[in-house]
Image 1: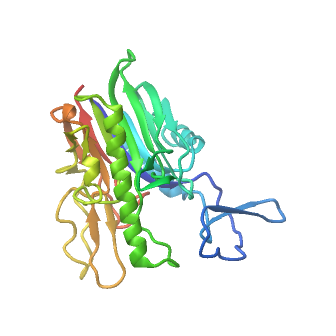
Image 2: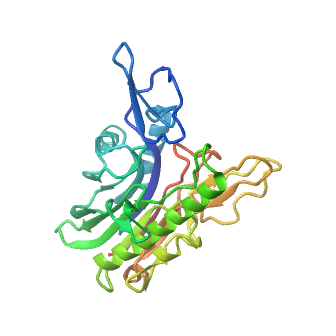
Length: 323
């Protein structure tokens, strides 16, 4: 059995925490990471006017515990990692070098959060699709981060399957932008990304091929914006997390906040402002090619103990593949 998982590590940055002043907020057209230098030569890095800091120590310890003690995946797709060096450091200092093979290619995100992969199994060719474009916007890269393609090999270096890891456009709209139009634009960006994924996989995979598509999709599986992604080379992909087990029952909502999740298939909780009830969605997904439809078991989500999440605002998910 080969355990394949996905986990949004929620801002695994390498920055040191320190006190610093930010002189001015960016204008409405600001974007990306800005740098300033203080008299003591400390580098201050901000994004949209906010100080960018390293992940809190206790949160880093907690995501490491969930990976090592709970998941123990053979192949783990990760999202929201600053760069490959912090992922290697995380593996070395917090995971006890659990994963000898680590991949991350710098993507397109202005906040510098990338997708990566850690594996106990050998890896074959690694392909980044960060430069892919969509016909509707041929001058703009379609992926907010990347679509990372990695061949997973057995210990005799024979190909087992190909894993595609991605992190699609979020619902976030900066406060200075029109919220309605911003939401429409974000949804359309996610739709174009889904279409690009289908096109790429259809081009890269042979009919009947074994592949896994996973990552943080920022929409539930039944979203119309993800629908184009679910067919590749005329093959309908299988949702491996349609009815997952949980490592523990979901934490009950407080009085007046509704009955809580009505399904086990969720990895992200959003508590909107005002009287609206919390929303539970399966943002972190694992899709399988038809060739793997009868080869997976044990779909599981490690359930958080706090409403805000344990070390991350996403819960990790995994399956076992019988190859």
